[in-house]
Image (cartoon, rainbow, N blue to C red; front, side):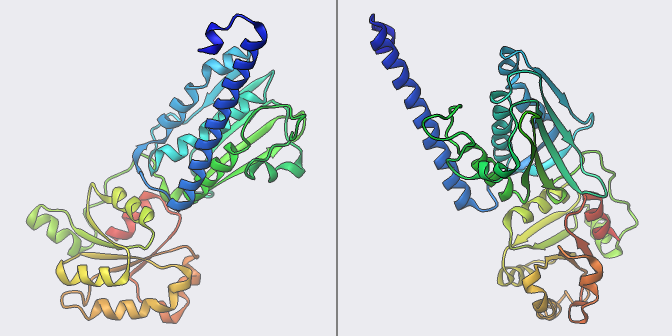
Length: 344
């Protein structure tokens, strides 16, 4: 109001600075809140199924006017096919917006390019790249810029406004999703910021239905009752468990257990056609105990057990104490690998 009504230039300029300072303070407060929320959530909440290609495209389109106003060439390189994924979309979108905002802010001529690279059999990670021809960052500052309240230009003579928290929040969000943000940059040569996410939480949308010549026990219920086979997923990480549940929901009914007692109790109350167990490195020596507990429950003497591990299958299977599973699935994996493990 003071800014709009003031007639004296000095008062008007002071009001403008107060408005800008208040805006920066609010942005800082919101970013600190984001950092606190990310620290409390761990792997994050609010996940759901969405098209990753569309999310990247729509997020990129939000910055078209900003790039155009600076005379920058702004381009997208995206896959033609949809990519279904299960993630907290808001976290990924926030992180990507931070990278795009920085790219345009620190680029005064040239271009900004947004690229989405789908996973391959070799990498099994999805890569979202933001490349610019901006001022660039010296190698010795590559990690420092991800620290809270830090910028390459600091102090009273800083060259750019900002809270110094954007990249901190962005990297924390991506790390909470099991990925990371990498940087490749040099002064005067621009920058490439890359979001890398493991493919275990992603799935290409074009997939074949599982074949009808899978396990007789699994198929029998489908043929007789026209109901979905039932799978128990024992996974302590809630996000990973829900990703699995969403991945198989079209063909199977999944129940989730986040601790051993809950898993055993569910098996006593309900009949499942298959048990999937996430085996974390520190728990591998205890899986034989779990196997004995499962086999002791009436009706589960021969129920298939599938292990979800992060080691190589050879390393896992060579341990004689844990050769108790009918199949082993190594993270990260494609949906087709998951469906094959269930039906074979």
